[in-house]
Amino acid sequence: MIKKDVLLIQNLVALFLIINMYSIVKSLSGLFFALIIQLILFFITCKVDTLLSKYLLYGWIFGLLILSLVYIGYKDHNGIPYFTAAYNDDQKFEKYAVEYNLGNYNFISFKYNNFTHYNIQYAIYIQILSWFIDFGNLFDGYSTILPRLFNILLILLQMLFIYSSCNKLYNFNKTQNKVLLSFLAFFPNIYYLGSFVFRDTLCAFLVVLMFWGVIKLKEKKIYILLCLFDIFILFYLRELLAYFCLFILFILIFKESKSKVRFGLVIVFISIAFVMHENIYLLLMNGLGRAADFTENAISYNSMSMTSRIAGVPILPFGILFRMIYGFITPFSTIKELFISDETFFYTSIHFIVNIIGTLALLCCIPKITMSFKKFDIVNLMMCFMVIFFCCSFVFRHMLLVYPFVFICIARESGTFIKKETRQFSIIYIFIIIIFYLSINFLS
Image (cartoon, rainbow, N blue to C red):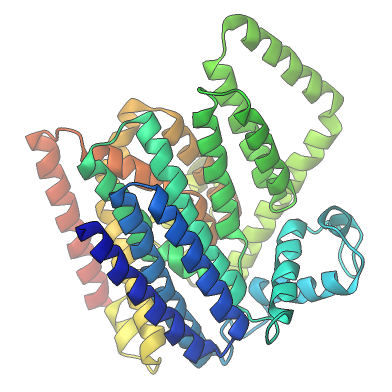
């Protein structure tokens, strides 16, 4: 009875936020799509356990709240509800989707044969946006809120797959599950980044889906098809990430296989490498070239910023370490930057939630993340590869690939017995973080 009452209240709050969002965006297609997501969540919550169903709806409510704040705040700040007033990725994706609808394309042909560009790395995302254009045309036309709502749904589905994976891998207790679900439902940075028309949320979902597929491989070998299909989709979404995931999949299958199968896998791997050595070389050069482009863009954006200074450090030997640390301490703002400025209330509010609450929460958990590497397993492996990918691209949005595995590590360590010395170290560490933040505010 208590479960039904709580779920009823959560659904009513979500419906109120959906209506509120409609009053902000004025999009009938957005309203109907949000109601479809609400219906999907209703069916999911009827099938899963009480704890997960409760946190799924918490995540939906929190996601709608963050999405509304981002939409209003950035529209007030930039004049349009996009990441910047200048032409950016989120606007570019929507422009290409219109172009896609005008031509007779599928996502495979569009990658290499389109109006203006060669080898578009995200052709399947353009396909998805074109579907949203078609959906919007059934009502009052396309609205930029549609792919943003889709991102929130993907974040909630990530929660579902991560929860299932962790209970297969670790059999988490109630405390560990609550810690895991709390981060997945309330960590503001993932919802903030999902509130724009970026493909990174979809990339993160596909990486998590592959992770879940690898876990299920131990039960049924047929899940290898899911993993390969997942990588195929990634190839038309973010090509370099697809190769990362293919390599991870090979390592994990090799690790779990018997000696004869391992020998066969090595032969297959060497054969593929020999046949495709030119393609692999071009891929590496392309990846390094794109990393250099990202670095150059970061440096030129603001030569005096911390981002530019770190981007200017060569990736090896120390640059990768600086970039990794940077990923965990950004976005970051001082109180002066947030509140002693001419920014609007909504713009300031969203940056306070993300830049201070979100970043400080993650910083305080670094001791647990570090301790999780004492028992190095598939989660740590996935996190390491995703951190390397982030360090190569050096785009904050790509931390979305890292966060799911960070949350698993935090939850895993939350259920272990903590020695007195470790507890004291954690308290001292958190105290230092607070002093560090207050010092920056005082000196700025």
